[in-house]
Image (tube, rainbow, N blue to C red; front, side):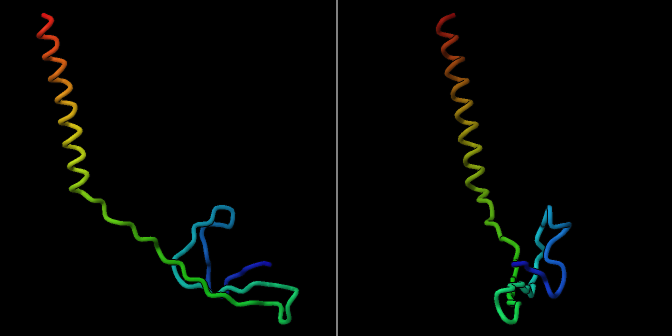
Length: 84
């Protein structure tokens, strides 16, 4: 079975490295075992939407990481003072 588009280019730049274009495309498939030997399809390609980054959670993670590093540094400093 071989697919071809009836209304424009389905991907770019070429078939070896395809990047599918956004839109609706009428496709036909050549199937020699049927009469007539074509079957029609409609394919719609839409961009994938991504969820927004939860900025307050990222900021909280950054702050808790910084506090952890500061507390480890303070413990090491205190341990050095005890031995000196």
